[in-house]
Image 1: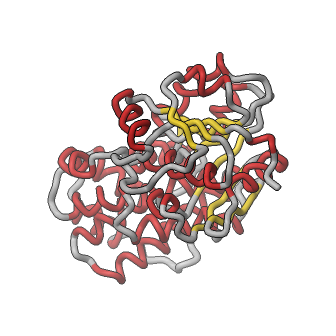
Image 2: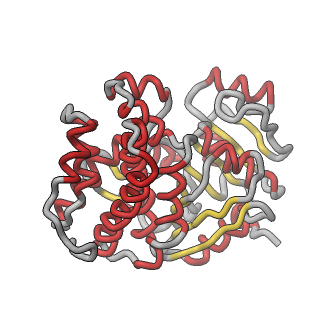
Length: 338
């Protein structure tokens, strides 16, 4: 039996991932309210009972309701799930805080860091909401469309409150959606953020035509960088070799549904960063994460050469081929050396 703690759920963010999670929870019979910033988009979803903009031809379950009042959506919630870009995450918490009843748990499917600080979103949420709201991070490996289509998927829920993570897992779990829980919040956050940066790198490599060998090497060495940073921040090695670590990294680096990979491919094929961003047309979290990951790496004195070269391509006008050359020309060393 599903826990009544999570009935009803309010999902903030009517993009692809927020809507997919709203659909998944509603399919289990839970009442779900879905809110987004774009009033025209909300009207369209209310009329069609579908998010044609992001998840075409996937009908909403009967228990999913589109709402236009954020105050109404939050005040009625017994659980709030946030799915907005990382750059908007802190602002959204400040907006909903006045309407949030004491003790209501908050989860998010946002990946990345608080801009310009390198701070984890879990820490930001704790600072803004205080310690009276149980918090949880929802992570992959998963693409929104496949979850919306009810295709087999496994995802991770991380929380320092094991009771909340279990309740959330029960609310989401279904025959096609398997939920794994963990208390390793740091590991899940590092994996979710860094993989987006590395996926841009993998896309650049493929866009340049460097082939499967180069992609495999980039993923493997990128995982090595991710693991070094994660462990330095107190994460568990087993988390990084699990779903939210290597699983999410492989998915995002190898499948063209990934916006980060799409961006990298466009850059590798000769587009400017600005042109590539316009071509993708949606938020690419790896761009924001590249800067913040380097902040955390420098704070921890961790070398992340792949992330550094991706950053240089994105923000310092480095030529993609020169970035690859810089990686290949690094000092020869044993694989286990840092």
